[in-house]
Length: 214
Length: 195
Image (tube, rainbow over all chains, first blue to last red; front, side):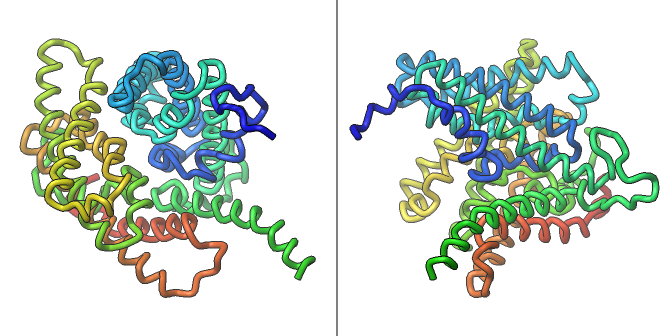
């Protein structure tokens, strides 16, 4: 099979699914940890953070991809950061206008989307080498993967830490909440737990193979 | 929030509200460079320096932007300032300590995208700290970051000698370790009169 030039590869399902599953930013690449752990005390916060990040990710990847032939190589990182910062400022003002409560809950972490490694990583690794449409599809996949990751963390932490999901009580009034889960250490523990689960799932088929052959 | 004493701010950022372990800022280098003690400490010092410079510049910039009513440019100008001060540190290190420069590798330019640095600039603006408060805040933040990094690196060096199941090795174990560290740092809560 001859190797096609990478930029001309057709858009396949994998362009999209790469970010959702195989290269999931939270569980596989462990990128963008700061917002991931800081805002995931509840499912609602986690989801809105995910959506905000995805919006910035898709828009910046689109713009970077459009301008990929115009940006000189030496200043590309600085250019990407300025593009990303522009969209983040947009989102920041948008959230402030739509829901002040949410803005207060997320706090400075909306502005900290700028330094989320996922976005810069995508801009550098994918969008700068591919046509706009493909870049957007890929960015969307990554964003959805990020939302899933955040939701998995936020959901678990809210269920265990407050006994609720989306503010709806799950276990009745007798439930004793695990307060540690909504505190900072809980974030580390839950993410560690998820990573363990995924490592175990990935190891299982390899182990089974060993047993049949060995 | 603008009237805390300097020692309160310092103890607060160093221990009670440690940037890494309580506020989740700067986790990428925390997990990435904390493998060995002799790279962890210089990394912490470099980051502290960038934080100080960034905090100074951010303070000046904020006054300037406020004067011209250009607050919406705050984020963009902060990030440009941080990127250039990282460039400065990079050049200095490359000239005076090439070995260290190579050891830090990709994580040196990545200080630019270290949330802790931008976090310092953003938080000092949000809390309306004055000049000396900002300076102490950024120095405490940097010292706290270095402390967390050094503690983590020492723990991980110890763990290399331990018999750990293969499944847990790698990021998962670092995270659980960080969780335990964070749990112990919560014992400092209430110190320095914060919260």
